[in-house]
Amino acid sequence: MDKEELAKIFNADVLGKLFPAEKSNQFFEALFGDASEGAYDIKLSYAGYDSASSKLQFNLDLHERPGCCLACNMTYGLPQVFTRHPVINIQGLVDNILKKIDVKARCESWSLGNTSPQSKGFHSIPLVISMVQ
Image 1 (cartoon, rainbow, N blue to C red):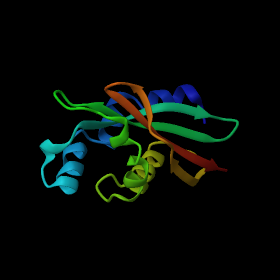
Image 2 (cartoon, rainbow, N blue to C red):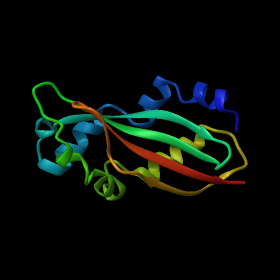
Image 3 (spheres, rainbow, N blue to C red):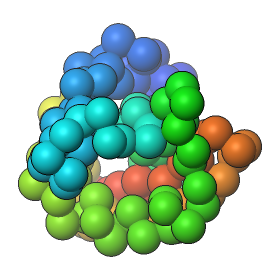
């Protein structure tokens, strides 16, 4: 897989279609019964491809909503929640990501890493897709 080609494929428009903005509200509606209870919006970003390990990396970026607090203690357990939550549907997201690339490789596994605070109002959860030829 070519790194530059992958960066072109996974542009902002494609990422927004893979993980639409309304998914944040759907998640909070399912979790709390009210979308306005959510403290952040979730966006998918592309973080690159490591050819040595055949791993695609994305991030689920958590952006604090105005007037809300994105506290670290609220986000550290999210990888486990996101892994299982049907609205977030990580397996479906991975399947859709792989449909965007035309390769003979397949997904060996995927995993969500630990929440990483980037700033007070912005945290990231890595999504790593391990590929095999």
